[in-house]
Length: 495
Image (cartoon, rainbow, N blue to C red; front, side, top):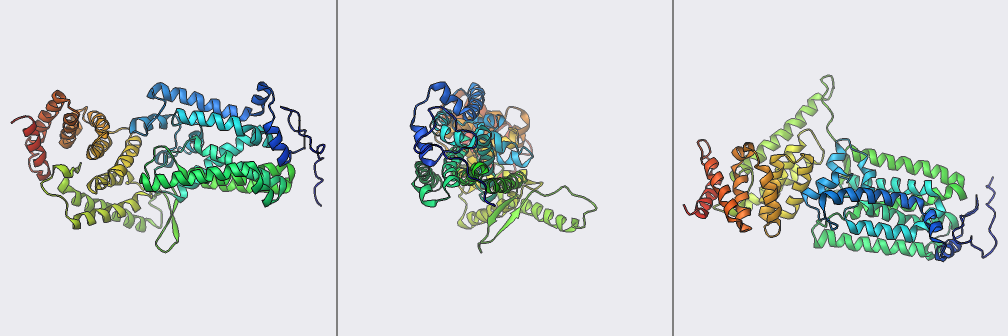
């Protein structure tokens, strides 16, 4: 039996400015637009978007703490800044794979700059009344958090190769997507939904998102700061669906309740898959497979032999790659080698990188070692932008260990230019103690080179002297890759 439709308001009459819709009564699309265009008192309008204000004040408090540490409104995605943002809830996939699943949600309240905060304020103020008034505060908050977290998880599962720094922009795209979903729940008419201003607004942001996606992937080779277009478009798609079912709870309860439960289960499943490090990566034939973290080894596991074989293959891959990279040392700097890698060697490096990446994406037990190898291979292949990206993430996951800082510094030195300041910062932290300076004297040399390039002559000479003292000590002279560095340091010191 069809449910009794809710009583219709008086034709052509929208609620008074600031007056909520009567209990059990939904606004038509025309009344939604008319109510939005009216100008109720300020306090009344603020009360209409109390859910949006709650989210915004959460972002504001979080950003206040972030700004106190970084000291800048325009935050660039450097390792130091990203580490601070990670402390305040930014989504970092490697940390999520270690069990911090809640970052799917806290990322939506972690602005990555003052511009983020201003845009959030504008969107919540302009579109908040339409969406929140139609859904109500509880369902609006559910929409923002659940679809936003689902969008991040969706991108993490289906676009595992991208470096993800998701933030409030994902939640904003959820709000954009909710508009056509809400309208369709009211009208069940595609024509009326497409003609509604909210849908046109959604279409505008879809186009804008695709433009940014093109710029990010083609013009900037995937390196576009904190912009995460896969998660944003995924959040918008979930926003359309969740906006529809949440609004249908009132207008069409059977559809709304069942749809909300089903869609909520799908989103929870995506978050679980993302947290476990599972992803779907298309192969050459258009198929795909799911990969995930290697389980703890159980002696009674009947599949222990196959897992031993897999682990042995990974260890063999590490040994082979390390042997290949040994010619260039732990921090491969081609600029300080007597000869450039041959085309055959570059081909080998590309092959090793692809193989190591496939294993590293599984987040297995030796993933940390594989990540360091990937960074070294990228430096050797002169893919410095990607090497810096991966190294910055590696610094975070390794809690700024000396070796991770040295790898990040080496990638920045190879890039040169404005990255030399970052290189000096990374490397000076890496060689604070004697441990890494003795194990990897190359890090001391690169610090001297970065300081020398920045015209800091006195500290640069001190580092070159330290490198010659450590790098030419007994037991260190058998490293051929270090000879050009020794010659360069002696030349700069006038020896």
